[in-house]
Length: 426
Ligand code: HEC
Image (cartoon, rainbow, N blue to C red; front, side, top):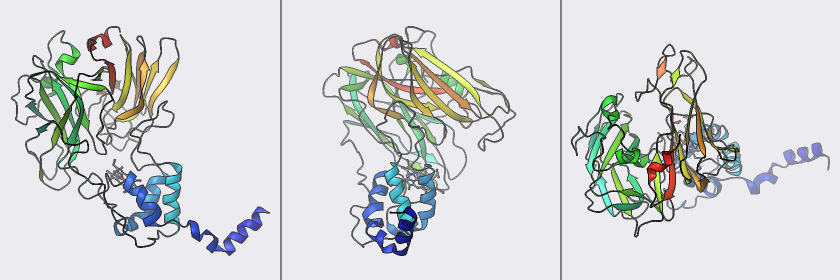
């Protein structure tokens, strides 16, 4: 049939499209429930809730724009990244088409059926009852103002070296917590030794950096778990665990974003012990970084490079790019001993509001001698709306006026191996 005729026919009989008309209850709600409401529900990170037709309807236009531009759900890795991520939040084209089709049809509600359990049950612990819960005793968050990085050291009180197969944050004030990192500090570590336990404090950069000459990387501190909005609790790896040595402390590093509501945060960290010693050990490292970055004034795309060579075989579990407000892009690659290169993660439009950990669906084998390389792009021009001072030459530092370039990695090695051997070669 002639295509122009077909179009005319369809226009003449709009009822033809009725059977496939998208409705809220049938087509849209399942997508919102699966993809949006973890953040778009009362007291979660997003400023508006999408838990009923009444709430969603006025946002139709904004939703259309947000999903077509892929601004929502927030997810910044491109498909050019070589690997599939198990926490990929991005919508499929079919999901986008369903949402836009519904909005273009006037956002009909459809049959007024019960839409079921409106919000996925937010029982306190997603991974079940923890073996041990560590509490953050009330951090006061004022109504307004930029909050400093706030620290707290809590003893774990375990008498034996303990393998932890998973950990989960139960965040109290989810609209106020920008991120929380929990580090394990082994006995004898030089990390923050001048500060008391069980008291909230704000150390200087120098105090945070103080370390003993020649101290082993993992003996000083190890990242156990990071929380950022949208984080989904999950065990690290079947048959893999992180090690907490007897007598260790947990060091919490917390950042809050005041939003006009004064509150006291009582977040908790739950630990799940492995039933037996695991075959594999999961390690978090922060050594793929460029401490020497020096961003010239006005430079719209300064590139900072970092690399490290693996001293022993390992498997890669996750990558988390970290920069501050001038950060614009990050790429992380593997250069294998046979010379071929693979893109592991490409984040062309970095957004410092989203400290996303990109978790590989299948851990990636990296032979000894693999070079891991990260390239971070920074925008120090006035065109960067978040740039506090385009006239500044910017160096490494943990204030947001300074910069960082770290690709945090989680690697897996045999449980019995000495983790320091990862860094054996340069
Ligand atoms: C990981 C958390 C998260 C998820 C998942 C998420 N959002 Fe959002 N959303 C936010 C936050 C935070 C904001 C407010 C800040 C911003 O705009 O970035 C927001 C803002 C929005 C806005 C307002 C944008 C504007 O124009 O002001 C829309 C529309 C939106 N989200 C739609 C969606 C839809 C539709 C989904 C699911 C398909 C979704 N979001 C999933 C966190 C999330």
